[in-house]
Image (cartoon, rainbow, N blue to C red; front, side, top):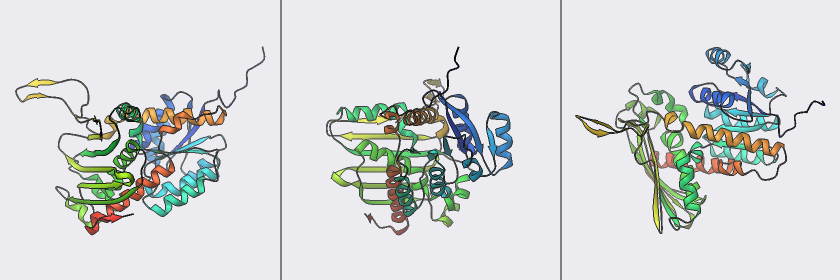
Length: 356
């Protein structure tokens, strides 16, 4: 019998992950073991402790200490970036120039001009896909709400209320992270910004106002940051968004959104639950909360990986429409999220509204 040769439609997408911190390791394990049509062919980190972990957890992957060396690996089809935010923009450009498809964790950049540079550069590489990791778009509950909005279930949507609230960490890891995080609005609220634009039909922002307070973590003051912030964003066409971000929740990760329309409203995740168990005891009746965003969005991280791989494989096989890509955030979406997040930071620091 003649041996069947692999084609772009049958061979797995060969992915290299750059960055093996907490989130990078989860992405790497998903790609290695849980995403049909993908193989984790390489992993990269400058830290020996990360590479030591990869030798045990990812035995099939080629390991690199240098990102440029991994990009030079001709056996890779795509790279998956889970690196520090300040590196994202140039790493995306370098990957495109090396002929790779790109998935990059949010944000695209903390700097609007850098986002614009990447968007312009990417237009030279139409055949290569770039997706930014706003994973809430792939959460089943958010997807169901989006589908209902698109179907007209609540009339015309005009207001989104959304929050990202993390379990308080007494050690305050984010205090050490604050000088390079871009602040609470770019680190946390950027997800809510993307959700709001997605649910409202991707309008452009016209004006924002933000304020905040330090409830527990005084160390944030030196970086001009807060541990609790609120904001309002006005959009073209009269749409509105209200945001709340917190580092100090006592009960766990509390992420939720609500979209209000002319004929109804949809609430997503108003009661944060780790499962469907209710506890009845002398303290009353309660359910346990998701402790971290990893736990809340574990399925979303997996689904976004599956969608990215399916979409890139469709491109490589020239199969026509790339429906999976339509769900993911584009470079232009990421640019708008950074533009709004930076304006919120400016408003927080100046006490004045920022008009675009």
